[in-house]
Amino acid sequence: MKKIIGILTVLAVSVCVVFLVGRGPKPQYPYIHAGSEKSDPEFLIEKQDLIEDIDYYLALVESAHGDPYRQVPKESFIAKAEELKNSIRLLQDDKISLICCYYYLQELAAFLQDEHTRIRFSNNWRKTIDKRFPLIIRIFKEKAYVLEDLGQAAIPQYAELISIDDKSLKEIMSETRKFVNVTLLHYKWQIAERNFDTWLQTYFNLKPPWDVTYRIDNEEKTVEVAGISSEEFTEKTKKDQHYSESLFSVGEENIPLLNIPRFFYPDRSAYDKFMDDFFQKHKDKSYIVIDLRHNPGGDGRWGFFVLDYFMESPYLTIKRFDFKISKEFSDIVWYNQHMTYY
Image 1: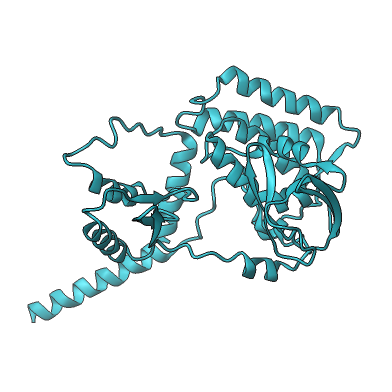
Image 2: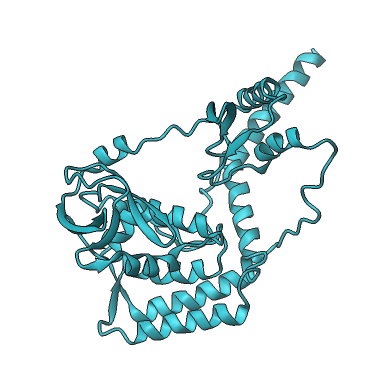
């Protein structure tokens, strides 16, 4: 009888705990925000409100960022903010569209040259782009070349782009570089290539069809380039993001090529086995090429697993790790913890 009473008591306490944990209002996110689905890119903001947002952002970076001035001095960052605020004050209109506000704020965020510090571009804004720019470009030595024409203009591969709607590519690349929040030059160009269509239409406001001037075999030509649907663009630019191996030849030698597009995948055990098999198979080779050119990163431990094959002894990965506990950090942790219990 005592055993039965004990079991019933445990069950009652368990039910009570579950009930108490689940009761009460849903925790509120600690900071003012609007869902991206509600953000209209043409919504107008008062100039003074944007200036106040810039001041708020300065204070937020100072308070919450662990090491904001690693790449640029604090004085330069503050001077950049003042430069942007002055340019806003000189605007003729008293109100600014939300999409323009984004570019002001992103220019300030990117000035820090910290890849993890940026203003997020709403996916809702991309939906307002009716047709996509069909030219896939590659930037090399400050020049833009056509890697692939997804449309009907038949611009030859490797043609150099000169201008779009009379705006020179040199000017376009110079203007948009200020929105790229990374330090390495080749990575800056990769991000510029990736965002070229978005910047063309939402920053420069150049809409389809476009008059594109290009140069091939020292001859310049201008053609009209029509846009393509987002669905067609997505389908034609779909890439395999899985790791893979292949061989390429240099003279009489076949060299293994390991391609790792990113350092995170759903199945870690499959990744580990693939790498084990690859390095075991090619351990006697004189050369191995690992292609990380378009790898944006991920979980560093996945990279260390590959690096281990080249090390004969233990190696230091982190000498010191500092964690800044700001009020903002504490607020977000509190919110996430309570959402978990809720």
